[in-house]
Each structure stands twice: as structure tokens, then as C-alpha cells.
Length: 317
Ligand code: CDV
Image (cartoon, rainbow, N blue to C red; front, side, top):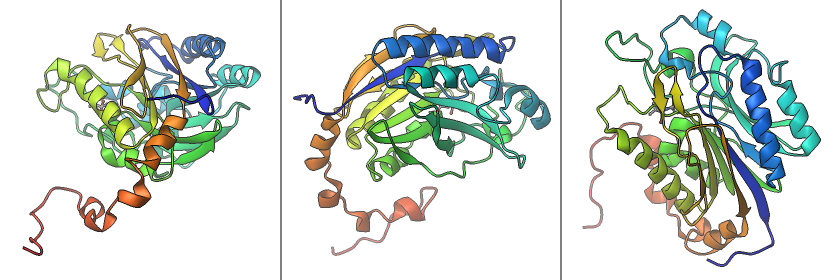
């Protein structure tokens, strides 16, 4: 594909290595600060951090909701722990995307992310919609996946916001596996989708071979970037958190479906791409010109049915 000089956005993904139970917020934020500095020095204007970036991936542990709130949730954003990140971003003129566990003033709990612009203002918030896992205690399992216990289903939709001279859509982890996530973004003309994830290498829900964890992750992102003609920037928290391994494979994917940048470690690592946003326009004028080619009158089951059901009656045969 030919690239144009017209519309470029320096996007960085700041992958995180493990965050252990013993690691405090101050130490974690210091790591984020270092990666933000590196990303800015390498030309990024937007830095994408992982889901639940400030703590270990705590839904793997059985505990009461009250204990989880006390240990792992943020009760305000920004707060004293993350303020250094906001201050640095503002002074460097760089924005960021950050996932964290949110406890609202009204006592609700969400798996949340925020988009912060180059002036240090929170310009959008997302609360995770596709919550995987379970709410009961699986006593025989090697670890838990308690997102359905600790979090409510998000109530902020799939937001797309004008920022960084483009439109940015936000989502978290399991959302990437659902085509509806990305279609909701592209129908709002998002040109960039940002994603943070924690993907355990073992899946306690079904016996999925370990190698498929990486391939289903990449397939989801590459297909979604292409089919929705958008850039996707995806940041992992990975490596072994107190013996619980999670995949890396943080990527920046172009609207061609090609991987423009990919991490090679399971540690803190910054990757950068100078994303040509005109690629989005090219696809949307031609093969994925939605206004010309989509046929929503034939898609009604997508919003009418949740689970799979019977085939529709045959028509005009
Ligand atoms: N944090 C996640 O949403 N993780 C899921 C796992 C449980 C499959 C994921 O889709 O990666």
C-alpha cells in the first residue's frame, strides 16, 4: 500500500512485565513513568498501557469484594499514586490510555480504562462490557477468573472520542474477541482502537492448548483491524505474576491487518509506530465503504439474539 505523509500519529504501546502481589502502586507507576518518557522520546503522542495496569491481575485470587476494593481498586482518578504519570504526560505533551479497577462513589465496581489527552485531561472513560470468567469459587481450579464477581458489566457503551487529531475507540481484553466491539467503533468512524489486556496462558474454562492463546489473540486483532479499517494498539501485562503466566505479544496493527510493531519480551517494553491515518480513509472509500456496501436489513439477528438459535425461515426460494 502507498503511504501518505498527510496524517500521521505516533502511537506507542507500553507493555508491562509482571506486577506481583507485593508490588505497591508507587513502584508500578514509576515503571509507567519510565515507559512514557521513552515513548515520548521515540516520537509517540499517544501511549497505550495495559488493562488493570496498577496492580497484579487480582481476579485470579478468591477473596471478598470488600477485600478486593480495599487492596486493588482506585477510589478516585487521578489520585496521589498516579498523579506523577498525569504530570509527566502533561509536561511532555503526550496522552495515554490506562486500565485500572474503578470503585465509584456510589459503591459500583468496574474494570475501567481512561483516555488522557496531551493536556492531562481525562477525555473519555470505558467500563469493560465483555467480562469473562465466573463469580463462584472454583476450589479445584489452579487459579480463579473472578471478573464476574468483582466487576459489573460496563455502563458507558463503547465510546469513541475525538482526540489526537483523530477518533479513538476504547476497549479491554476479552472485548477484542468480539467483532461487535470493533464494528461499534468503526461505525462511529474511529480510526484508532486502543486495548489493554491480561491473558492468562492457561484457560481454566476449557482445555485450550497454550499455543492458541497467542494465535487467537493475534487473529482477533489482525482481522478486526482489517475488517474495520482501523489502527489497533494493544498492550499486554504479561510474564509470570507470582507464578501465574500471561501472554505477551503486544502489537500495533495497521488497517491492512499487518503487524506494524510487536514486542519481543515478556517484560516492560515500548514499541512505537508512526501510524498513517490516511490508510484508514483509503479502505473506507473503497472495499469497506460502509455507506455503500453494508446491508443492515440482513443483520437484524446480531442485535435481536444473544445466544445462537434456529435458522431463519428460507425466503424467496
Ligand atoms: N482479562 C481478560 O479478559 N482475559 C480473557 C481470558 C480470560 C480469556 C481474554 O480474553 O484474554
